[in-house]
Length: 97
Length: 478
Figure 1 (cartoon, rainbow over the protein chains, first blue to last red):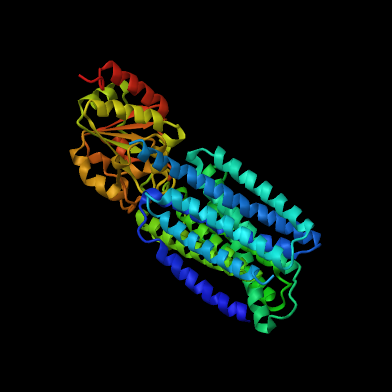
Figure 2: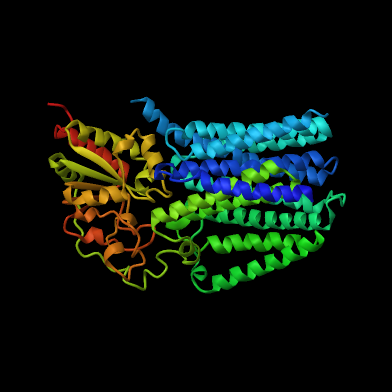
C-alpha cells in the first residue's frame, strides 16, 4: 500500500508541475513542442524494460514486452530526432546572421 | 547491493529534473534545441537507471537481454529512419504516428501484466484493486491513443475520408455504446483482474476511431495534441502497473503539459475543445447551406501580369498555405522575395494560426527555406496592415482567406478567424485549379474585383514569376 499512496502524491505533484511548465508558448513552437512532449511520453519504455526483466523465462511475456519496447523506442527516438530536425531550422538561421 | 538503490534514486531524480527543464525549454525559441537534447539525455539516463538497478539487485537474464536488444534495435532503427526520411510537410501525420505507438506500448505493458500476473499478494486487497484499476486505465487510454492517432494520421494523409454516418447523431450512440462496453469491461477487470480484458481493448479502440473519424482536417492538430496528452496519461498508468515513480512523474507531466498545449492551440484557432470534439467536421452542411454556389466573376491572369504588379508595389504580403508546402515551393518563394527585397519592396509573411496543417507548421517550413523569423507576422498583427498593402500573394491557402467567415452567417466557416486579404489593393491567388479548400466551401474572395487568379502549381508559377521579375530588372541593384 505504501507504494500506491506515495505514487498518488507523485501523480498529483507531477501533474501540477506539468500544468505550470508551459505558460506562454509562441505559435512557432507549437509543432516542435508537441513533437518533443510526444517523444517524452515514450517514457513508457521503462515499463516495457521492467516487464521484460521481470518476466524470467515466460516466452509470451518476453515477446509482448519486446514489442512494447519496440513501439516505445520508435516513439522516443523518432520523436526526438524529428523535433531536432525542426528546431535545427530555427537555429541554423540564427547562426547565419 | 546496498549502494545500488541510492544510485538509482539519484539517477531518477536527475532524469525528472532534466525532463522538466526540457519541457520548459521547449517553449522558448532560444533554448528549444538544447532543451530537446536535454530531454533525450534524461530518457537515456532513466533507461540506464532501470537496467543498472535490475542488474544490481535481481540480475538480468541473458534471455531478457536478447529481447531487450531486439526491441531496442528494431524500434530505434525504424524510428530513426522514419524521422530522417519524412518530409517536413508530413510533420503532423508523423507526430500522430509516433504518438499512437507510445499509446500502443503502454497498452501492451498493461496487457502483459494482466495476462501473466506476478503479484505475490503482498499489496493487500486495496493495492490489488489499485493495480487492476491502473491496468484498466492503461488499456483504455492506450487503446484510444493508438486507434485515434492512426485514424488522425490516415485522415491527414488523405487515406480516409469522413464517412457520412459519422456526421449524424448515430455516431454519438456508437461512441456511447463503446464507452459503456469499455466501462463494463473495466469494472470486471478491476474486480478480478482477468475477465473483460479484451472487451476493454476492443471497445476503447473502437471508441478512439469513433471519436476521431468525424473530426475535420482543420481541427485535427488539436486532436493530435489531445491524444498526445492521453499518451502521457497512459504512460503514468503504466507507471502504476509496473511500480515506477519516474514513469508516473514523466507521464503526468506530459499529460498535463499536453492539455495546456491543446488549450493554447484551441485559443489560437478560436475554437473550444468541446466544439472540436463534439461539433463534427466543418463543411458537413456546406452543400446544403450558403457555402456552395458558382463563381461568377473570376479574373485569371498570367505570371507576367502578376510580376508587373509586384514591381510597382511598395508593400507585399505573402500568405503561404498548405498548397505551397505540398508543391515544395518554399525555396523558390524565398528567391522571389529576395529579388523583391533587393529592390526595396517591403515583404512580410502573414501566418495564419493553422497555416500548413498544424500551428507552427508553416513557420518550420519557411525556416527551412531561410526566411528571416522577423518577417513572419501573426494574424492579429498583420490584419490591420492589409489596407495599407499593395499586393497580397496567396500561395496555396484557401479557407484561411475566405471572407465568408466574417460576412456570411450561414457559412460553416462563420466565426473562424481569417486573414483580411481582401482589404489590400490587389490580391493574387496562386492555385492549381478552382477546387475548394479543405473545408469544401466556396471562397468568396476569388469573386472579388481586386482578386486575380494565377492558375498553376505553386512552384512552377513562382519560377515563372522569378524569371519575369528578373526580365523587368527587379532586384538588380541600380
